[in-house]
Length: 97
Image 1: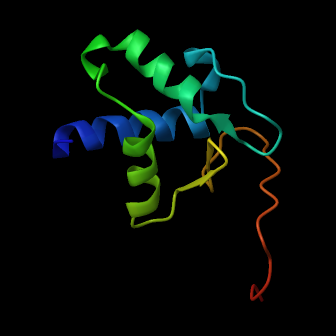
Image 2 (image 1 turned 60 degrees about the horizontal axis):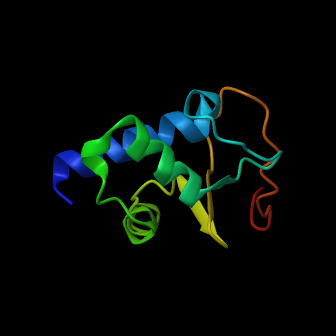
Image 3 (image 1 turned 120 degrees about the vertical axis):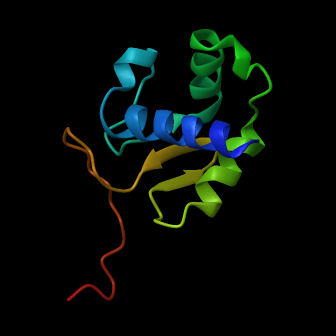
């Protein structure tokens, strides 16, 4: 992935997971989780030049994000903060004063 592609996909992930999953026809559960394969399909459908996009690319973005913006689990992903709608994140509260 080039830096430009990484930035583009990252911005799309942030937008979808924080603000507008409906624009990509994605179903999000009450905890903010979205199926990664559905996200990839939606991205490729909207932007065919991303035909090469696979699960491991998304996992790499999630795992290397320096701000910890995303979580990945069991084939799903979500944003950890910054939502413009109500999401029950059920994040651990240990160690928070």
